[in-house]
Image 1 (tube, rainbow, N blue to C red):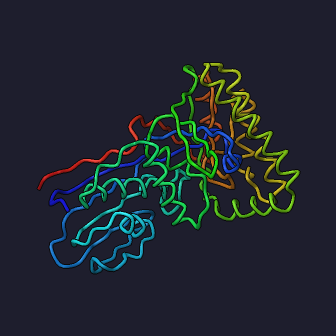
Image 2: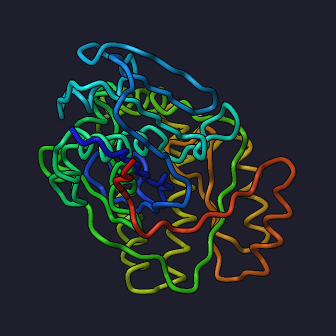
Length: 334
């Protein structure tokens, strides 16, 4: 193990297109944004390992190196990249929270990615490269701590940064490539101040697919086509096609929620959608829905400013920039 202090950061994500359908092989578009999980690992000054986890509140643990920390993602990473010397680490995800509430920015994926990046260097392994092999490894680790659910789209954003086209190929092999937003499109996030119950929603979605397979295939085909058209439009700088896909996908997510028996588009998001429509702004929930964040897109900066004022104070407008770097790891000598 190195005697240097290792610091890292990994960005959070916003899903633009492809929610739910990505689990069945549809393409998704995801943005890495400038809210980060930070990790720091250095040698311990005693015989114990020490971990401080900072989210909505702080949690700490001290333990012998051969014992687990009790923090799932930390223990999964260490198990995959063993190291037994005493260490002292901090995992800080507070930028991905509003107080005690998750913002819906993929905090667990950003935490996993930042910790894995720091731990790999600290434990004497190679620096994690932003490539397909690392993506596959991190997606596998994330599924292990999430009960074998999730597509891994948020892991891709945390690892690579930028705008990503993500897809699960045969045998659920994750694939990521560079994508883009249309040049003239601006966006803002809208936080409903409530957290989504993503695992519950995914469980209801899986149950629906099993109970109504023909209906599910039809619905997923529609979502897949819209996502593909939207990503193609963005790549071709077709603003109108991209914004139309945002609106269409948002409406289909609302219908999907009705079919699986949950409010993917919550009452708060429905109200924001109406406010967006009045200003000719494209709006949809981002991620599994039921709370968390929505995304508003427009080429009209004046209309976006009016929109931001119209949704406050019921919701919180969050300005995001796209993070271009993804995982960053540095060694800081004592």
